[in-house]
Image: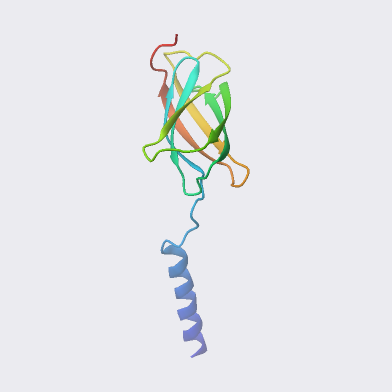
Length: 131
């Protein structure tokens, strides 16, 4: 009887653990798109699950196909109101990018109240012209 109860409890714990009861990510922003120009990274963002009016820092790192660090960018933005359709921000880069190469783009979002979150894109090509 004791073994049966222990087996039922173990099975219930395993089912609970693997049935989708996972921690919800609390992000202030959702990064949905990244486009590169020769001097800038254009990021499209949506409000996240923990969105509220606050300052947010965006850190962008660019690597080439050989995973060598090429350029980076940083911008602090004040989020007062983000429409449901999203908003786009331009982050200036430290070096000029070549239009022939595909780049790996890593973006990290940090606020005072929540953990840092991020997203990566691979094989992003430079598009558009820079004036």
